[in-house]
Image (cartoon, rainbow, N blue to C red; front, side, top):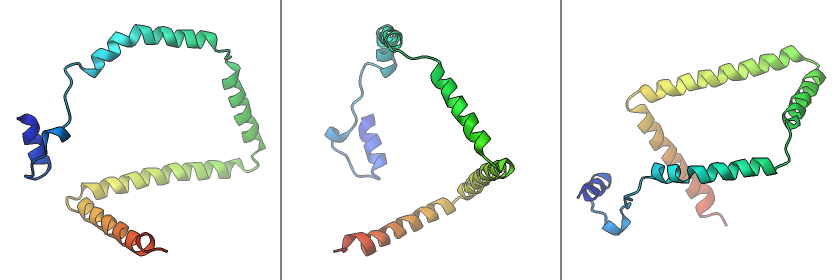
Length: 129
């Protein structure tokens, strides 16, 4: 009954056949993970012991990055561009959050995007020979 009410609410009044509804399992996913945990841990330990890895991989990466940083001639400009990129990302996040806070604007922009996508498909993809 709850699945039927869910499908009716989801589809706006149209009923969905029971074959298309998600089935609920009697066993929770976290129970399966907890039961398999000792076996998985032992597999990971065996894999880590059998692999021939050393901690020098991380050291090589750090040394490579140090060498590339030393090769940079204009370090203040690189830092300025990096800081500018971080500020631009933060500012973009603030603007998108402010637009999202306006009640109808996100839905209007979604419709504009859908309209543009439809126009693009019609113009460039649908009848392109």
